[in-house]
Length: 326
Image (cartoon, rainbow, N blue to C red; front, top):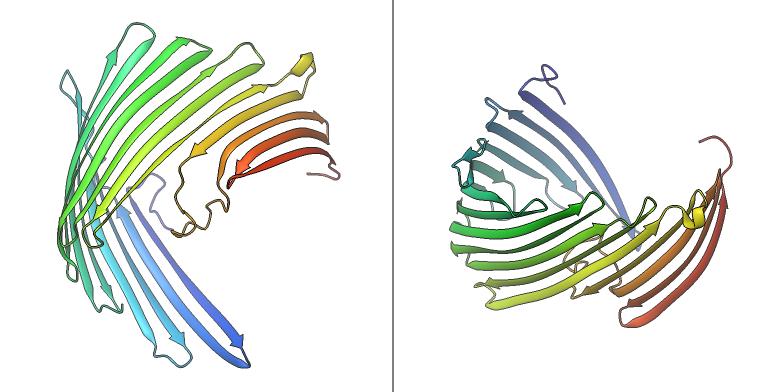
């Protein structure tokens, strides 16, 4: 990475990678090699405007196959001015354009251009000394022209209302509800709808203890004309956590209890999310007693869960001592 100066508006990045793989099965060995290089730049002529570009080239070689050269180049610009105040609301516009070109793929050369415009209106309404209502409405439109797929127009909008309440320095709460929709017409026919509700808060009873709670509910419906199938999902999840950092007045003796639940899942691992959990835990109650004395750690806990429809109960005691310098 190179930048002319620490506060300069221009930056350049570049990199390279060489990879060699060997596979052997049944006495037959296959080798594959790849070498790639990338370069990119970012330039901000003004505080509201950013121009960026990138290029990637990859050379693939495998036994018994022809050599392939894949390239991808893109350039784009974003314009995001500061919000404009109109007395009753704040207006935030944004504009983005991008062009990309790809060679060496199975579909042949491919070119794509995208133009996107968005705007957002927001307003904060005080409701007395302890509460504030936040309102937000956003709209957007985009045009995607693909040399292989064709031209697609995207329209989207979203509205959210939130209420924050601060009754004291030790407690606060937040409620929000929103709905958004996106429609694509042309080469790609899709419709996506999302409704969301969220509530959270915290309450402190004293200097050493704290209670927090949250709940989120989502409803999603997606329709693709190509598949002719409408998919919908609902999910409700939340939790309550209580912690005390000085149990019975003993320093470093802590107690932590949490209860969580989750109703409605998607097959995230089947969709390609390698970090998704292997099991679905619908209910979980966990409490722990933690005590640290220098390098000695003592953990006493209990865990009760409902995992994939079966009960899971655990009780554990853990004592650990650290040695050496760290």
